[in-house]
Image (tube, rainbow, N blue to C red):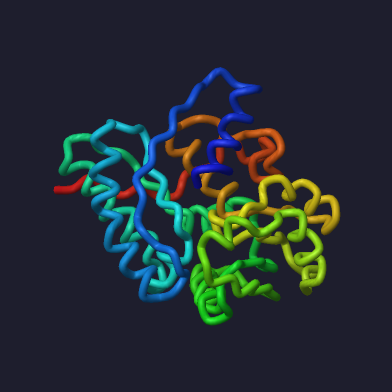
Length: 246
C-alpha cells in the first residue's frame, strides 16, 4: 500500500494534471495468522480517525486477507464502519478496502473465472478463494506461496510471479490475479504477465488504485499498471458508497 499504490498514482501524474499526497496510519501485524489479522482489523477504527484528522479525500484499507478472514462480505461492513468513524470525526471520506476493490475490479473487467497467486498459508488462501466464490467469482486454480512472515511477503521477488502464474490452470480464466495481497509486490510484473498469459492481469494494489481514483471522481488510468488501468475502465462505476451515519 505504501509502495505500489503511490507508484501507480505517481505514474498517473506523468499523463494527467492531478497531484496526490499520501498519509498513512499503521495497524500492527507481523505474522499472517488469523489471530493477528483479527487484532489488526480491530485497530482499523483508530487508523480511520487518525487519517481523517488530516481531512483526506479518500481512505484505503490495505490488508485484503484481514478483511476476508472476518467473514463473507465483510468488506462492506468494514467500509461502512470506517466511513462512519470519519463522519463522527467531522471529516467524512469514502473508504476503499483492498478486498472490496479486488472484487469490484474483477467484476469491472467482467472476470467470472480467474486464477490467483497469494503469499498466504494454504488455509488463508482457501479463505480468499471462498470469499471470492461468494462474490460470484470462480477460482479455477491458485498458488499459495505459504509465506508466514509479513516482511518476507514484501521481500518476495515479483519477477518470479509470471512464471508462477503460468504454471496455474489459467487457459479458461477470464483474468489472473498476480498478487491477492497489497503487501506482495507485483506491479513491475503486471504487463509482462499479461503478455505471457494472454489475458488481463490485476493485483490487489492495482484494483485498490482503480477504486481510489474512482472514489475521487477521477478517470482511473495509469501507465504500466495493466488492463484495468489502461483507460478502458477509466470512468467505470464505483462500488456502492457507504451511507452517511445517521
